Amino acid sequence: MVCESWKAKLDTYLDAELPEEEMHSFDAHVRSCPSCSADALARVQMKRAIHVAGRRYTPSAEFRKRMHQKIVAKPRRSFALGWTFAAAAVAVIVVGTLTSLYVGTRSGRDQVFSEIADLHVATLASSSPVDVISTDRHTVKPWFQGKIPFAFNLPELQNTEFSLLGGRMTYLEQTPGAHLIYDVRKHHISVFMFQERSLPAKLNESSPSPKQLTFNMETWTQGGLRYFVIGDASAADIDNLAKLFKAAS
Image (cartoon, rainbow, N blue to C red; front, side):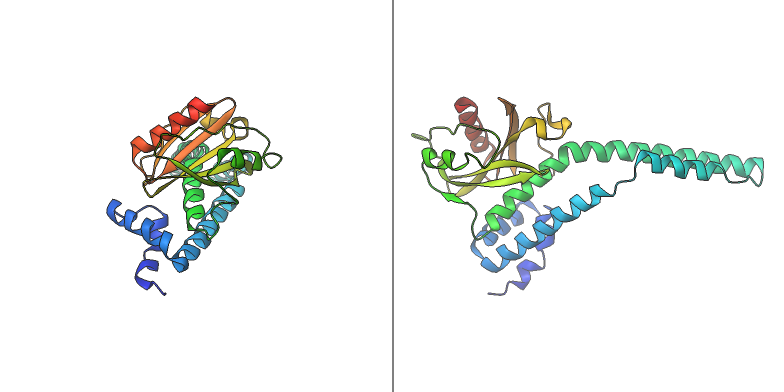
């Protein structure tokens, strides 16, 4: 089925710029429509590739220094005009420095959160969201042995409202990790685990999730691992699943 009215807003949905009610409607539609799911997955992958390419060509400090030297080395037509150019150059440098600091902070923290959200959406949009399908933690956990460079524990879900759907390998900042999917009252929650030392230094301290995310998320470090719990379930459900993982670890 062709969903032109949905696809017209698909990019806005993936950028999390729709109203909250519309975001929830899109979430439900993407899960049930193979055409929109495939399109969403393709766009998310392209978005991530663009992010990686953009970071690859960030101007270096040496390049900025050379540009500054070329600007201030030009002949001055007059003292007043030269002072204007010098002031403008200083303003450019200051703005550039502040921008670099801001972008650096985002790339070290908010960028990671954004990529986690992309991984969550892309997985749910995929026709094969998990590589190992099982509700048994004793089946899912051994599957990861030899595939990722760390071990982890999974919580016991008996007498809880959560159910394990399965897991898959994933990558963040070229770092391999584990991605588990849980279900609670028809809401899917992703749990990501990576080695803390392999992630940006800005995540070494506990950081709240950015307000622009349309998902609820909790993140913490424990036993050398960085955990991310994210989904469209309530904040209470996200918190309860996070507590189960903290207790299991």
